[in-house]
Image 1 (tube, rainbow, N blue to C red):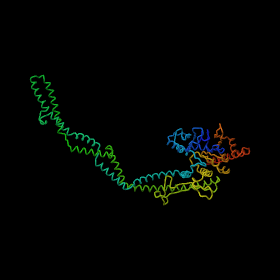
Image 2: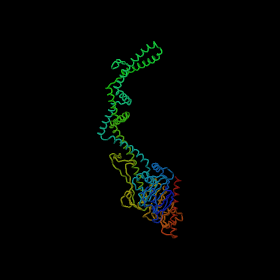
Image 3: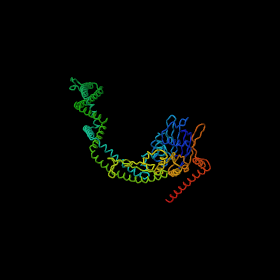
Image 4: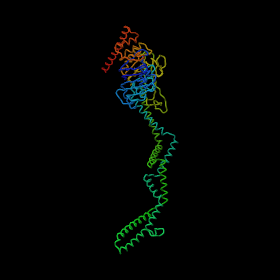
Length: 587
């Protein structure tokens, strides 16, 4: 519900604050006073295209702000707020700034949002019906939803939609499996080659590390053997030396023998002899270790070549399938899984075909039941709308709900025929109207703008109001082209419609205005040499004066007539309320 509308520097509006209540709100005033400008300001909160020309001359920007109570639309609005990162609040504040330079900004609860966010939220809050507005009932995609709400079929439609989505998933999988067979064969051949290549290699991360170490050792083998021989010859000499010369151990032994003779004469050198004996023993140990290393080292150029070839194989596979051995092995596992899927594709295709056919049969059954329920509800709706239109002075009019199905080989079976299906069912629903006797019914979207369209909309709204979740309905000059007798009927219908919605109506007919629960008067005034629009909320006396002016005069007789119209409307409303209360008490 729109609680308050504040407008600054918009067209000829300098500043106004319009407070609205629940029920039926009426806006009246002379032609050109600015009533439609106020509706245009509301349109800015609904995301309509901003125009710099609407900024009041001499100002930098126009500001429009609306305060709303979401009401029944709260859950749907909450989802939109979450999408745009806006904090939820019991009261929703939407604003629009239009700058004279041409740009505009939008905010919801103080947070800047794209203008499309206003449009998404706005269509959940307000529905505008007027001579130049594309009201939501003209959008054919809403017709089926409204019919289902009217018939209480929303749960059935959602259940059908769930099964349709499941079937669509199966169809997508089947299409993927039914790609060109030659392509699948080529793919299978490639996968087989890759899998065989990886499996044949017998890769192991541990083996690769050992091969690297072995290659490093073998690649220096010749130099290592030569140095070992040189070290051993220096220690042992004799057969180990190329020239047969004495080695370090021979010289150490000779030195020990000399010291033994010396000690026999001079024992004071015994410590020198012991140190030399220890060094000799260490040298002997080193010589034995070198001999063992020389005898144990198995240098094989053939083995080095084998190691190099094995490491090249590792390098090639990692270059093809992954930077590490683990990546290569993982690639092979995925390839094997994909190959298995291809090899089992025929079986899966057959299985999917059966699943899809079964799902189609079930969907066809659900869609047929839903369609029959819709057609039954459509006949009831058509009759009710025609009664509404006749009461609005459109005798001879017709209202039809058109059901259109499309045959499709990929559709679902219904009574021996396959029809295309989507989440809503097997038909496209469209409202059609004939406003004049003898004229063919045409789609609602093609009905010309004007008072006739507005009355059609009002008749539909009166019937569908219980199914419509939009809390606020705005009717801009709905009485255009109709007289006082029909105006009385329009007023009663608008007031009745306001039982479930907040209704704001811009009207020129006193017969409509007297049914308002709240009456505001729009006027122009010249202040400081400039024209500005003002809005006054009328008290009872002011309302009588305004209705009298709408009747065409200010005399006492006209005032009595105005007061009589107001009293008649009040008595009628009291009677309706009393009947409703009695019905509730009895029920």
